[in-house]
Image (cartoon, rainbow, N blue to C red):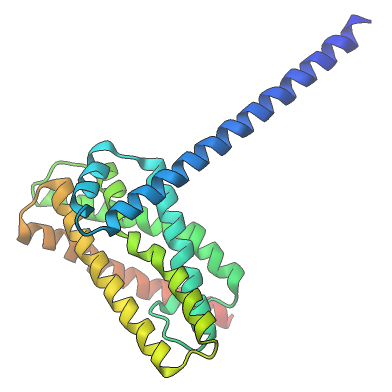
Length: 233
């Protein structure tokens, strides 16, 4: 008679434990989400960006940085998909070749964070070769903050599609200008990120970014060819 009761008690305790674990995971994700938005907001502020990038490099908020990277990837990729459907300029040939929104989301969730990891590893290696101490995780966190302007892509794309569904020439020119400004500001933030993380001088900081930039262009071209061949097949 006691065995079924004990079995029921164990089942109830297991359910309670599972519920507690789910609540803990939700709280952890919500905390990482709030920290990601907070770090992004401070990074977008020109008067607080250097201090925020230094904080990210020193404190290494890895989970918030990963959340930031996912949000940036989703914002950037979906925005390009929306603008591309309206006939606007899509600066990424890879995203332009993806057939539908499901593939765009898959690329944003899987490949964009992978690019973040590879980019950070290559920059860290280049900085080490230039005499800096190894700070790979620190640069992963600070570089995630440096790409905070990419969070603005989706709101801007939605605003443009809402105000100009057919994407008039004026809206198209504004979109191109917006992309150039955000890319330029992101490049500046990346430079500050290298300076704040590795304490390198100006020439070495630029060189640490130049080498990975060339490698990224080569890898991007290879990825584009692979996706193009897969789409043809």
